[in-house]
Length: 453
Image 1 (cartoon, rainbow, N blue to C red):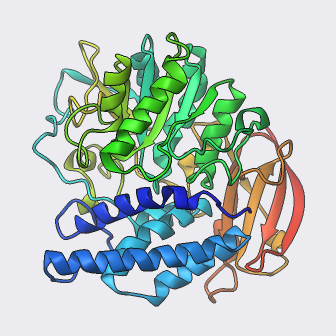
Image 2: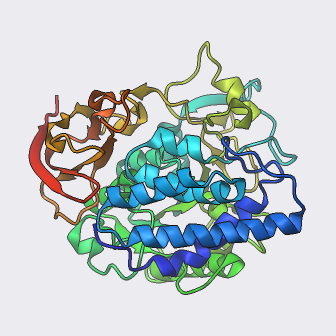
């Protein structure tokens, strides 16, 4: 796997996001369930977090110099285990949780780092007991709500990949409805061959190593979307970054084609259409001002499962009770056709994601609403070298392609480990190149065929 040559370009963005979250830990907005926050003054806490960030950056940079994903992950994981202090773990848990999504450990990523969703004053009343609102499958309702619009914005939690799943699942239906451009946060405009090549590589973007993110880009390309890199370049932070993102979207899409129709994937509150964000406004607000277009903003990060139930929003716990709950993402739509949003005025519609159901340690939502199927894989290719990272790439894509799926097998690391505990890949029907990598990046290869039945 090539080293990310563009990491410094996003270092300030990472720094701002991590420090903002970390500085809020002393309050109630953010939480890492394993860590107890020390009782120190705000000034001391700020200093401790900045020091933790600098240490995290050093470890991250060292890991990036290794040629293999598994070796990089091991450096990150070992560093986390070696330092139990709260300031470091609160910062570094977000870095490590990204890597856990990269290696296919989605449940582990969510356990390690989560953002608590407490009720707030600007929350709308719950739709659950309001007869005006009807529960609808998110996939059907969002397509209907997006019909006739020129832009639809989806947000995501960067280390909770289920918040990318609805976007992937809807791309075909949105393309059939006439949407023709797709933009994703932290894609690099330096990858000039992405559209022609038809698949993402490590040089295509910052979060692209995560297979669902890569599948999102790959799917858009295969469906004929024009894929747009719109993130801010250079050292733009805060409000300056939001303005530059909005301006780039407008200039790259609607200034060239006023009749274009755009799907955007962005992180967290970048898709917030009004209200204060960081030191100003969010990208979606500035996009509205620049383009005159009112996007449909789909919020996907607030009504999701946390490993600690008290971190779930009360509306979430009320809907997803142990007795009965929806098995797929849902939204609420009023009898007048207007959708329900947890944050009215900021977002147009909120998505409730059901709790994960695990099959051999992996969440079943990885089937992407039936687009993919579980494929049980043998650990034989690992040749008894554990830990072992198994990757499946589409046969018609290059060896530099981001895999369609990855899993980490850890048999032999502990007496209780079994290679069969975590050996399911989720893949579309077709032929794949399978590769197995150990910590020294030694590689064994094979091919597999996933049937459509």
